[in-house]
Length: 114
Picture (cartoon, one colour):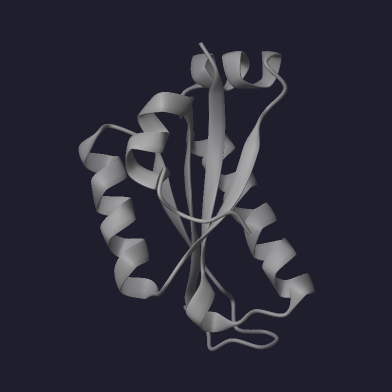
């Protein structure tokens, strides 16, 4: 059964490429560290698949987080420290998983890849 971790990024922030990369990395690391160890082990044994997707704004990101949590998926916001281009506390992205790919796709399957 394939597993993956998804990072959903707010498109409305128009993040510079470097900032985008760092925020995605934060989300991937935090999601993996906060997840069930047995699930992480399976995910890593399959290659640690990660997918980065766009959402429109904070409102859509919050709805995705709520939907993921209602399905029992690990889901965590990433808030920026505000040291560069964003105000402190700006929610930039959402990490979901790692978990079974089909479970995550029920929430994020219609979003576009970055």
